[in-house]
Image 1 (cartoon, rainbow, N blue to C red):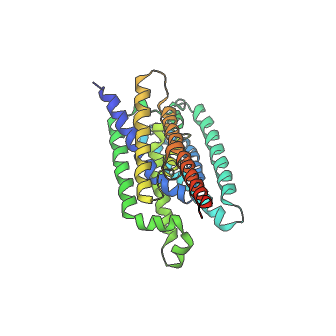
Image 2: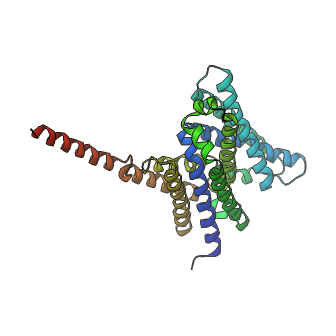
Image 3: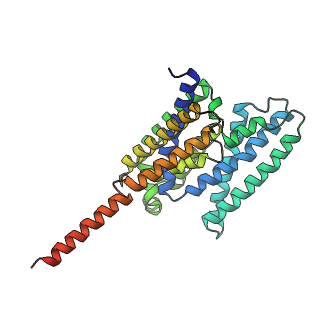
Amino acid sequence: MIPYNTLVVLFGATALGVAAGVVGCFMLLRKRSLVSDALSHATLPGLAGAFIVGALLGVEGRSLPLLLAGAAISGWLGVVAVQAITRHTRLAEDAAIGAVLSVFFGIGVVLLSVVQALPTGGAAGIESFIFGQTAGMRASEAIGLGLLALAAVAAVAILFKELRLVAFDEQFARVQGWPAGRIDLALMALVTLVTVVGLQTVGLILIIAMLITPPAAARFWSDSLPVMLAVAGTVGGLSGLIGAWLSASYADLPAGAVIVLVATLLFFLSLLLGPARGLLARAIRREQVKGVIARGEAGP
């Protein structure tokens, strides 16, 4: 019999994995994986800033809604900063991401030192967002993650045509009159939502892995986008489910890190066995081509 608390954690971690896998596919196809990295690190000053504001206003600084609101605002500002630098300067996107990531993370570390000096207490409530605290998930948080997964899948289903067009050929979409900028903002809003809600589960350092690893694994299984979305959601969900179960079964195993390690294992299995781009499938096709060539040379 699985304990109730373990069931709550398994459900929440699985839901987060599904949502991250589905939404992360479009970030991977748009070659914007590092934007997710900048976004996750940009949430740190928002978390610390929200804690300080709450303490100054006499509100409970460890309030979950307050911390998530701060993380969402600073994460969104980080993404906007990357887009503004890329659009209005000659810097490449990777340079803009590196600059924004380092600046926001540096500000976050400084604000954390301020939080440590506050008379209201240390930063224990914030540290759970940095490293994740899956084992402490409550039923309300698991339900929230389930609703997030449903909302993410529904949003992708509704905007599937637009997201696919912008993901594969943004310039063509602009020429055809599609609002590529607004579609991009909708995608970033989804990524921000998944990142902020997933902070408490796997932490801001590891949430990027959940957004990128399942889609990267799915890329080896099919060239069809609907199939890739289904495989990425499955890989993400299995990563959350197996990782959370292992963490609950063995003491002192950090759930966030185990979830990411399971996702990494599934990635390497996909790399080896994926029928579309996997190493084994490529080797078989190469041998088949060699056989055809050999038979052609042996013929009249």
